[in-house]
Each structure stands twice: as C-alpha cells, then as structure tokens.
Image (cartoon, rainbow, N blue to C red; front, side):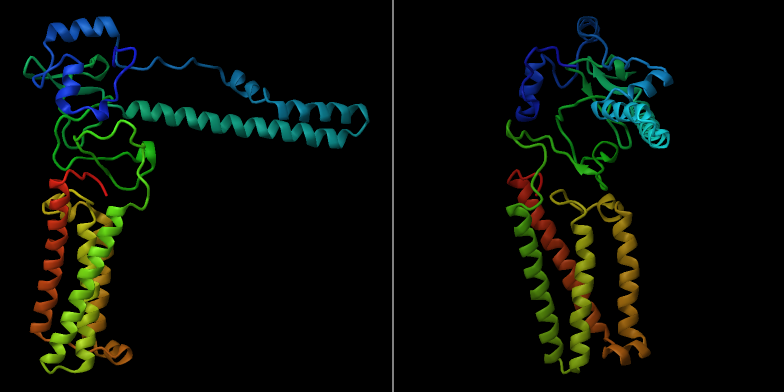
Length: 333
C-alpha cells in the first residue's frame, strides 16, 4: 500500500504525523486523488501464487538431498541383490513424499481459507463522505472506518480508538482478542512484549495486597462481632474466593476499562469458570453435610454484605489503577 521506497515506522509516528507523511487528512482522500493513487500504486492485493499440478507437487517432494541419499542407497541395494531391503528403502522415500505432499496441500488450503477471510469491502472516508469500496481498491492515505465484527482489510495505522480489540487467532493463535491503541510507540519496540513486565508484577502485588487486606479485615471484624471461629474462617475463605472471581472480570482487559457491558460479559470463559466455582463455594458454606466435612459454618446477612461490598471495592480499586495507567499513557502491561 505504501508507495514510499523507504516507508517510515508508522507505529512510531503520531496520528497527525502519519497523515502528513501520506499527504492525507482525517476527512479522507478526495475521490480523484484516490483514483490517481490506485492507478499509480496498483491494487491492494497480493499476486496469486503460481499453480502447480498435483504430479509436479509430488515430484517436488523428491527434490531433497536426504531423499537423493536414500534413493542412491536403494539403488545400491538393488545392485547387491537385496530386493526386499531395496523395496523398504524406496517405500520409505515414497511414503515421505506422499505425506509431505498431503501436508503441503493442507497448508495451501489453509492459505486459501485465510485469503477468503480477508474483507472483500471496506468503509472509507472519501472527501468527508462514507463510502463502501472493494478492499483491493484501498490506497495509501485512505481513512478506513472498521466497525464491530468487521475484518481488517489491510495494514492500518490507528488514528483513534475506544477499547479496540482484534481477534488475531488465525494469525498468532492468541486465544483472546488483543487490545490495540492509537498511541505511538518506540520505533525499535519489539513485536512482542516479554511475558513478565514490571507493571505486571506491580499489578499482581497490588491485587495481592488488596486481597490480603480484605481477608484480614473480614476475619478480624467477624471475631469482633462475636461469631464463632468457624464462621469467621468461612467468611474469610468466601472473601478470597469471591474476590478472585471478581478479578477475573478485571483482568479481562489489562489496561482498558472493564466498566462496560462487553467488559463484564465479553469473556465466556470467565463466566463459565466463575459460575460453577461460586456454586461450589456456596454449597461448602450452606450445605450441612459439607459443613460437617469441611468445618465450615453458615454466614449471616451482615457477613455476606461485607464480603460483597469488599469484593466490589476491590474491583473498583483495580479499575482506578487502570484509569491511572491510561492517564500516564500506558497501553499494555
């Protein structure tokens, strides 16, 4: 898409600088300019790979030094009169070629499937007006307006976003959508962040301190109210369990806010994990047989109210920390 011989590091440029480098504006290109760039730079698509016949693809599997050695060993074995051994050697070479051909065929079909998944059309701004154009007709400088559920039609530099997440499972294997941000990053930033970062360690320590403080507060307050040791201990365990279940919804997004409907319900895995764990914890607390087995005790309304209030307070405290990180310009942990 980019006509420049040495394109800049787009991710390192501010949105305004990226637009200036492409001689574009937030209102998009004029239709005449878009047509001129399409004629000059060509269509936004890769040339199709050359097609090979099934026989040519199979014969190509024999174009390998190790296969040459194997075939030479088989021919030598034939000259020595060991036809059974020669048959085994040639059979191994043939099976290797067939298996490799099947794998290559699967890879080609997977690549075709990825091409089929690419957006056929895109919504762009042309002269300040929204237009639907073929993805192959996008040009450098087009302002693309993707919506929820849309496929990304080409390489894009974000100008602005709000809680944007992209499903990259087909390309990277990530099991959850990846957060994206419009802020510029360093030109030499690595393509992937380390698994453990200082901010992530801070988040873990922060949540741990909140959990320990809440658990101690519940335990000491129940003892001060004169409840039994078993009841105080049961309330403390419930505080830890419910607090951790609440954090599942906090960590749905590391930095972006979870205080919206998609943040609270957008992760079916969290819901599937939270529901049975909560039900099990309630059984351990309320069912008489399990009470006797695990030395738990029923909790009164005051204990449940305190547990739920502290769990909500912990959720909001983590959201406040995320808001502070966003104000400081941190886009990921």
